Image (cartoon, rainbow, N blue to C red):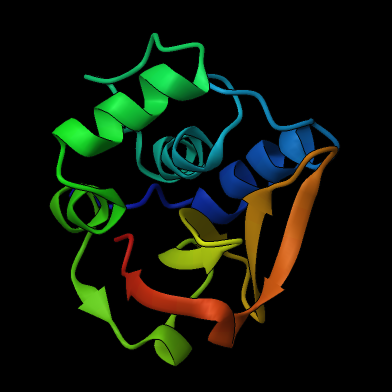
Length: 134
């Protein structure tokens, strides 16, 4: 993983402001691409560069399956694993929502993930795993 820009906080805030009221959309604003877009804003590195271009749930699920699942994707594309409650702003978390593994971004005291109509906040202890985004 590359280093964060010196002004990563303002870059992340700009990314979040642009996404805050955006509805979930496969291949544009889903959990994986939201997190990867935030990481790219903070570091300049796009962890999803090789998988962009899908537009449907079916295509997304195929990619996730081919890459070994969400945990494997996060483990291979983000920084070192950290205890969930040690996650810091900009770190990546794995949550299970409605029986589905979901990636989310740490907002400090909560996780952020695309919801049906806007970014949703979830408690830190909702995550089952976390990775440091350095």
